[in-house]
Amino acid sequence: MMVSSRYFMLLVALVSCPYGRLSESPQPNFLESKVSGESIQTCGINFYEEAPGSSYKLCTNSGFVNYRCPGNRCYGGNRTDRKPPALSAFFFTGCTREERLGVPGATGRTVNPIQFSANNAEKMLRVIGKELNGISGPHSYLCYWHQNSDNNHKRPWCAGCTYYSGP
Image 1 (cartoon, rainbow, N blue to C red):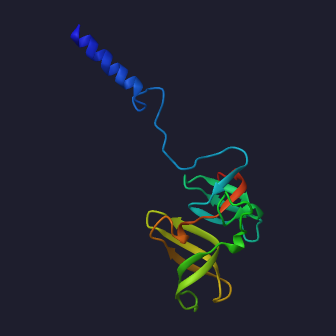
Image 2 (image 1 turned 180 degrees about the horizontal axis):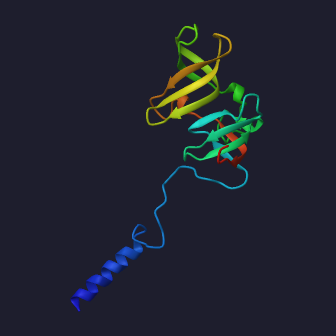
Image 3 (image 1 turned 180 degrees about the vertical axis):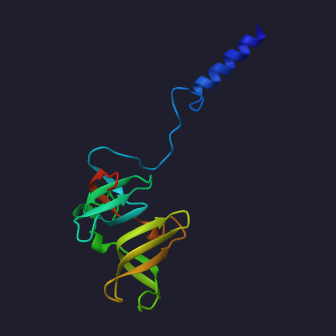
């Protein structure tokens, strides 16, 4: 009888543990995941134009899920702002302009992003954008941050986004 009570206790432990259930598989614990219909998304990984001149932005959230968002509904401030700032008022700071095609490199640049890709593990952004009070036109930049409270850890967000599986 002692053996059967041990098996019963093991069975109870397996049933109460979410990873021991046969009917469920553990899901990744992403910050954000796929949402059907229109949604608000923070572009934590990627943010870029759907195509040159397009009025839509492609946004990859922190859960590595892609969304297509109307560009006129993308903002640079907090979601809780009563009147969120336009993307034109959103900047990454302390960036390094990459030397390319005869354009000299420079450090300490403030950049309004047109597009970016984030490597959050390395705390680095690869940005194409326009400098504030600097060289004209879009250029490539590297921007870093050290703490989550740093300016370069902030990301734009968009409303009216729909899930996008790619071309």
